[in-house]
Length: 241
Image (cartoon, rainbow, N blue to C red; front, side, top):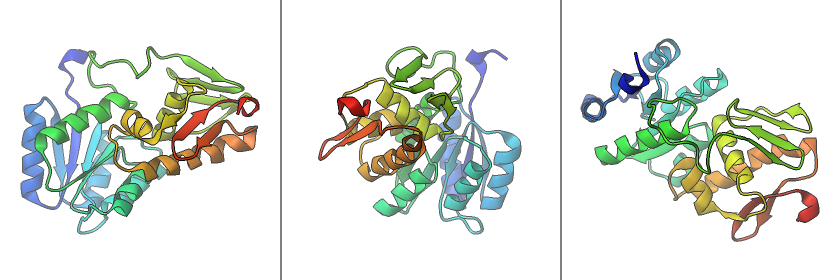
């Protein structure tokens, strides 16, 4: 099968049949292959065995909730993109979903067209390609980026500092890549949210992921990520801070 005929496979998980049907019809109309599940444990097995390209995941499921399902997949090393689709609209829930490894967070009621657009955006910026026509990563072609003793290989999805490998999640990798493509430049939280997560409402998630990166990078050398209070963050060697 050629890349042009490949249909990305989406696992839709929701205990409400009308939601599963609505999302499924919209995604199929726009060229996706869809499988569905009504329970968390069923979805977990389908995700493990069916290698979906994307999960559209409700949180309030009757057995294993969506947060725990996502946490288990990430703990197993599965980086399948996840869009939470839920009635839980509290900011704390949004931040929790994203910090657990979710790629986007959509609240009910929702626009099916907007959901399809977000699904495409998440797949474009994720590690899994679904179309030969997808654009290259923001900022240009894949490259080996270098700032001080930090190296990021976009083609291999590898990061090293001082020659030591650094294990990053897909979201951490995308955030670091965007910072490294703009060395020394102060990037606002809104810019980071837009380019890394694809939306611009929850600045707290930026702070959380910046702290994750610092925990992994700072033990290997002088701090590279600097805070411009009230504005955002910049990646540069400490000597030029």
